[in-house]
Length: 374
Figure 1 (tube, one colour):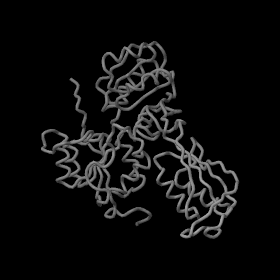
Figure 2 (cartoon, helix red, strand yellow; figure 1 turned 180 degrees about the vertical axis):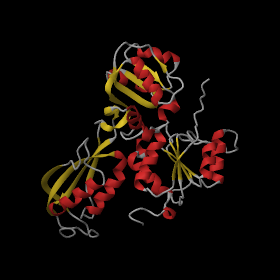
Figure 3 (cartoon, one colour; figure 1 turned 180 degrees about the horizontal axis):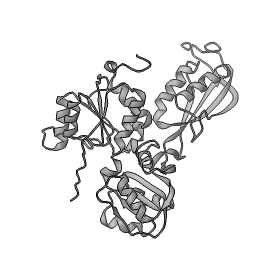
Figure 4 (cartoon, one colour; figure 1 turned 45 degrees about the vertical axis):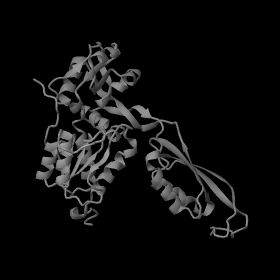
């Protein structure tokens, strides 16, 4: 280590992707997705990383030129199973080229879409929005841990759980509920009880700890509990909660610092997303202040955007007949898939730059947008 930072030639691929997953855990990707390490191994040393929106043959060539053996892309180059690797299409050719050149490809897709500091927060920042929040918070993300600890070790176990990520609710941390009681147990001949002796019934004053946690960190939490707990056999229960998570979910809503007329807002959106052309529904005649938005394909959030009372909804990939579904409830603006997510590589860049400021990191200079405008 040098001044607290990992020296470059000891950096592994796992060092890089672990930092990204602290922001966007793989557990938050959608079931259909294929985020994670696609080629390469976590244990490989890495001498540089290239961040991009897509991974194509041109991106792999760019990584080779930059002597970077890790590509971190938003979109997975492999989305479904490959049955052959003959180089007959751009996916197979990209994978073959990466493998031949010992280049690892890592994708961080819908898991980065679904976190409060992810794709949509980057859009909010570009638009200068304030008071942002998740448009459609997810259910099934939160769990509750209940465990029992002797009074003497209560604080130690509690701190271990908090350090492992438990007890976070919105703007609050270290949240738990604790009640006192009495626990009983009787060990057999092979047991080595913390208190009492084998084959005798023991009673111990214990504290019941209840705390909430994100399901993505379940294994980390259980390991922390077992390491901090003094008992040979640790009693604990885990419950799935139906509460929504305020910081995990799809899309976002936010507010302009100053309301704009629709014409002004459309020009502002076009400039912000560097678009040659944007599609939109008929103007409503309303001032634009509350904005709903979703990077990438956001058709599935239209009802949520309308329900939120947004004046405008910015997203991509709406089909012709789907524009009718807006039904004059707001103004829908389709900026294009690439355009809506073009700033995503900056998220990866900032995460690694902040953690490893001396490491060789690069933002791709290649425009991978497959759509051209004439």
